[in-house]
View 1 (cartoon, chains in turn yellow, red):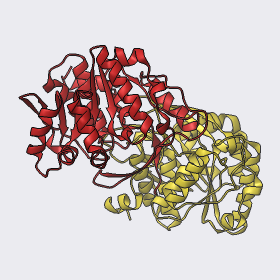
View 2 (cartoon, each protein chain N blue to C red):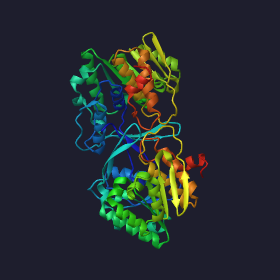
View 3 (cartoon, one colour):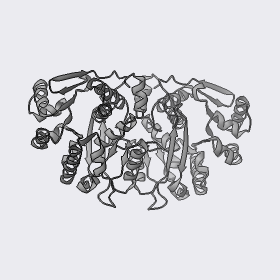
Length: 281
Length: 281
C-alpha cells in the first residue's frame, strides 16, 4: 500500500456527518474502542455536531479501519476490518433518539455482525412505534448477495420504508441484468426507493411517481468513496425538512458531487453554505 | 477543533518524501514511538521509498503530532507536541547514510530539543568529511528568533552550506525590515541561499549570482502546509541531479504549487510524472 491519509469514515457515520454539515440534527449509534482511532473518530463526529454517545469498548477488539486503495479513475478497493463494530448490540440503542428521529437510517454493511442486526430491528421498532420512518442503504452488491432474502423481507414486511441503493445493488437484489426491471420491482417493495447511478444521476421512485435527478457537474473525479453516503445525507436532510423529492435528490447530488472531488469520505466544505450558494436551500 | 484528517508530516520528513516522489534517493533520520501513529508514519515513509531505519522508541513519549487549523485563506495555525522527536540523538545517526548523501538537510525546528542538535552536528561532520554538502531550513521566524546566533554561527562556520528560508525568516535572522538588506547579508553568510516568497516566487543566491523563480500558477489555494518543505524537495532533487539553479528552483515551485492546492503536507501526485508533464525533467 502506498502512502496514505487517515480520515474518519464508515458509511452511516459519513451520512450522519453530512446531515449535520447541512445544518440538520443527526445522532449516530456505532461502536468504537477507546483507542487512539476511536478517540479521533468520536472527536470528528462531535466536532461536526453529531450526537454520538454510544459507549466505547474498553480494549479489544480495536476500532474498525478500512484500507482503501483509490485508482486514478476514482474507483476504490477496500480492505476492511470491522473491529469494535461487531460489538454494537441492542443495548446500544438509545430509545429517546430512536423514537425522536424523523428518519432512522441503517447501513446494510452492518448486517454481517449478528448483534448489530438486533440493534437495528430494535431501533426500527422504537421508530415505528413513534410514527417515524425507517430507511436503509443496501451498501454494496456483495452485501446484497449475502442477505438478499433478509433485505427483501425488511422491505416487504415494512420494517424499512425508504431504501437507498445504486444500480448494481438493485440489480443484484432482484437478480436481473435490467435496471428498468429492478426499478419496477423495488417500486413495489418499499415506500420510497432512491437509486444512484454514478455520472447518470439518480432516480427516486415513490408509488407511481418517478423523479429523475441529474448528477452535478464536477471538475475532477478524485475518489468516489463516500458518494452514496453523502447522497443519502443530502436526501435525508431535505426529506426531514419537508422538501420535495426533486429537491432532496438535488441536495444529495450536490453533496455526492463534492465528496468525490477529494480524497476521503466526508467533504471538507460546509454543506449548508454549498447548498445555499447552489440555490438549493 | 473541527473534524480533521490525519496525515504524516514533519518538515524534513515531508522533504524526504518529496525527493523520493521525484524519483530521488532519500534517507530520513527521525524518532517516532512504536505506537499506532508511529507505525503509520513509518509505513508512509517506506511506502514512498524513503530509507527510514531510525529505531523507534519503545513506549513514551508517544509519536509527535501537530494539530493544524487551516483558515479559508490557506494559512494555518499549528499546535505541536514534539513527543518522541525530542529523543532523537547522535546515536541515531547512521554514518553510512550521512557520508553517502550528496546533500544532508536539517530542519531548524529540531534545534529546540538539545540532543537533536548533537545529532545534526554529528551528521554534518560525517557529511563534510566525505566531501558532501550540508543544508538546513530556518523553519520559521519564531525559531530564528530563538536561535539567531546559533543559526548564524552554523552558516558562518561552514557547518551549513545551503540555507532554505522564507522572507520572514531571513528578515528575522538579520533583524531588518528590508528584504533586500537581508538577502544581501545571507548571500555573504552561506554558499547558496534559497529564499521563498509565497506568491512572489523565490530567489536563489550563490555568491554574486542571483536567480529569480516565478511561483507556479495555481487553481485554488487550500492549505499552505508543506509549501516550504516541498519547495526544498524539488530544489534538492534537481540539485543532487546536477541541474542548474533555475531548474532546481522551478522544480521546487512545481512541488510547492501542488501541495498548497490540497489539505495535508505531502502531495498525493507522483512528482516525477508532474515534473515530466511540466517539461521540467
